[in-house]
Amino acid sequence: GIRVKVHTGGVSRSGASAVCGYDVLAWLQPDIAAHVSGGPIPMPDADIAAVVDRTDFALEVCSSGNYRSTLLLAERLASRGQLHRLVLGTDTPGGTGVIPRGMLRNILYLASVCGLMPGQAVAAASGNVGLAHGLEEGVLEPGRPADLLVCGPVTGSAGSTLADAIAHGDLPGISHVVIDGRLVVAGGSRQTPPPSRP
Figure 1 (tube, rainbow, N blue to C red):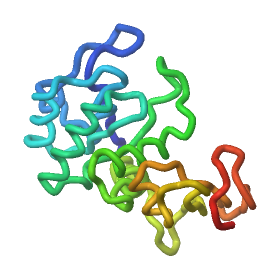
Figure 2 (cartoon, rainbow, N blue to C red):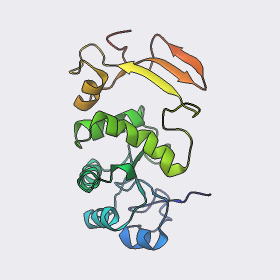
Figure 3 (cartoon, helix red, strand yellow):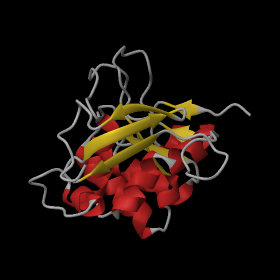
């Protein structure tokens, strides 16, 4: 029942790891290939294409990766009907430091630049992650654990709805946060501008 997640791309910050591309991943067959688009150095474009085309494990992209490689990966997965394999992470804290709102930034990039629908981008950050890691979390369903964000577009956003704002790449305003069934933020988060409607 243990899930195996493997470093990919160029060597890690320590310099102790080996370069990991398609050949290594095809041999290892991990459950999740971490930061496929770089963390920060991605595997070569040809390896990204081969991993999508010739394997079936989950492929993670992270905030500290290479944006061009993320676009290449997302477009290839979408063209093959395999977005269920796309999972999001931040790969932080690490050599890049900590990226504020890293998961939200990933969602916005996928929806505004990589051609994913807002719901697909949110699923890559939630349900796909839960499935890849064998967790009960990630899907809203009776009896399953879930933390919830209540959010919407901020005043001045190009979007009139949350989905419109995400599709445009605008950071949503968070008004409420529920963790473990407890309301921990009410009325507005200090991490985002307030939503245009309370």
